[in-house]
Length: 494
Image (cartoon, rainbow, N blue to C red; front, side, top):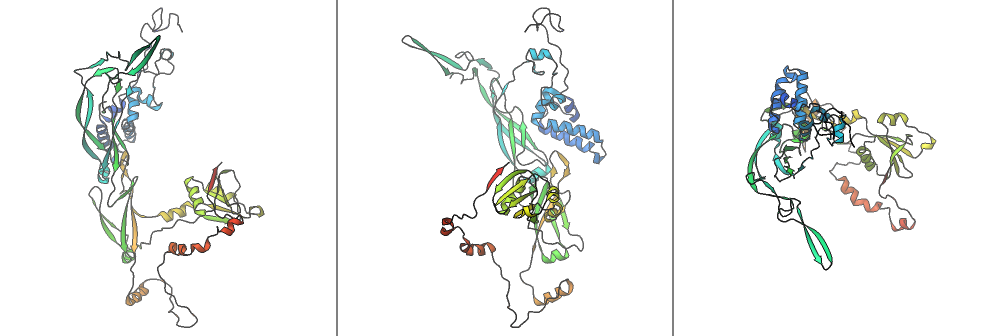
């Protein structure tokens, strides 16, 4: 393709003889200025700068909300390694577009392979990253922690330099010519002189100390990246050194994202009259936790809330999946895992039909008539009822700091188990009857009209197993008659 003369930015004659049209300026320093750090700042320095500015400008501390938003936006970009790379190349506009922030209307870039402001230069291939697991305690994650770790890396000897391999002329392979009679055969083999790199160079081992800063609230598996700190090799951009956070289990606290859980056993007396406990938190603070005056601690719910079940009822709608199975518990598990709000079970065919309806739509569309006989509608529990089953005692705001927003915290939940006494003496029973409300308990009648029984402990699973042989239906007679009860689940997505 040829252009005539007269185009701006070109000399007369062959196009491209002079500089291309100037590009739109891209600001790649604003975020660094906002956080008051240099462009070469490490991840640890960026995080420290953000914490200092966030405390100063947080709205809860009297700071300006808009300034705080700008600081947070800058930190969210520069604390993410991939976003930072995009920003360093293309600025904020390129970051929003996912890279390539050059002017898309620049036809000369398109003609000459500019590629959106990259000046046609081929990007360097990147070397292999070096990943290391790093064990971190829950205390260190709660408070934030800096570790100094030594790495050994291979670097190119700059005094020797990098030279083209004379054996292969920089190709990384050599051509061998074989003559067999009148035939000439060429064979390409790897160049052993340069190990197929095409370059001759020397390397040294270098030890470097890295400051690894674990941000408060960092999740398990979070990666802390040091860019271009891996081994060097000619023609490649150095890979990254990556530290992968491995959260160690704690003896007291269990973490679920930003929430913390602890277990506490109390006596029946404490459940009825109140209890208090001292807890040393992850930052060393001593918490005194107690019940409100007059509050009674009830046993925590352990069973699941009941589903709503409607006999001889259908809910007409398009099927999104169906499952040939009759185990209600398994069908409910499918429903929950796929986020369905209900299903209809055809009891004759042992087939469940799942429909993409909300809980309210299931209840409003349900129908019961002659045609729905043998169908059974199952609807997930009411969310408000389900929440009551999940209720736990908690201390608000005493959980983990939120990742990347440590001003906010999760909650501290206490799983309480009430230990009941194995036996109560007669005089204690009489005293309890005086102070505790309850029905009048008649004395056991000592007559021939009653059978007297005492409760005992028994395992229902063991009881079921001991008599299961009597309920085996798949007998030889059943198979001979072609009866095959039960069977595996066969689910089909529509």
